[in-house]
Image 1 (cartoon, rainbow, N blue to C red):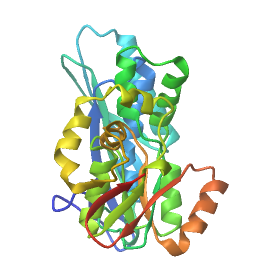
Image 2 (image 1 turned 45 degrees about the vertical axis):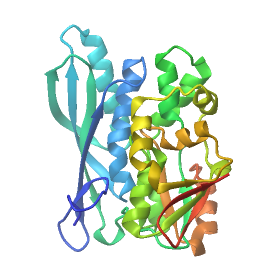
Image 3 (image 1 turned 135 degrees about the vertical axis):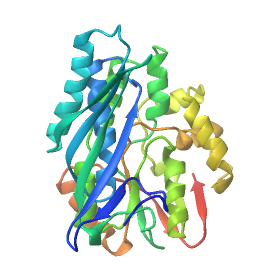
Length: 304
């Protein structure tokens, strides 16, 4: 059903009229200094693609690479962090594969089930849909600041908490309200992933910068242009497709290109059920922020 033709988050193979398999994989180098948290974040990130497409993960395999000099206890903590995050999601880790490499890498192959009639895809947005984010942005700039020793304890804990948070509740909320358009926000940044949805759906996104949530220190780090290299790559690749209002500053623009790790979901909710969606989110204690709307046209417009 979903393969190489489109930009979607995972492959989908239809089994029957009620059930399809969702398959995805992801892994990356450490984004934090503590082994357990790194493992948990990498697992949450890998599981996210299944939640983003309206699926429920059930099985995972570890993908890991460690330098030979890394102590066994550190490798064990990384794997434990991933395993316990999978357990939280109701996912069985059934093995995996490890190789030696110069730099640590960890992630998962993930399998999930999805109803073929309820797949959330990047081509599912419609004119009039209300746009919601389920996690704040600014992870790339914040983790880059962490590597430079610039974060306070509170800022570090905040970043780890959001990156470790599963997108399970947000995915369930979307399914319960028949959302058909959406994605998760990861390496291509907010604007890169939003552009994929807008383009695949044949709509334009108008977003209000003031309504977009950010980690507490992100705007300050952006003012100093503390960004990972991927954020600048995102601007180079997607920048010409974005219209910015003149009063959106260059650091603010860069925050929207900022490469994210284990970010939240971007959900396109039909306007007639948006109020019910917000009410249900509040009742289920699922964070959501209304950030814009889908309109006729193409590309993305950012107003202040």
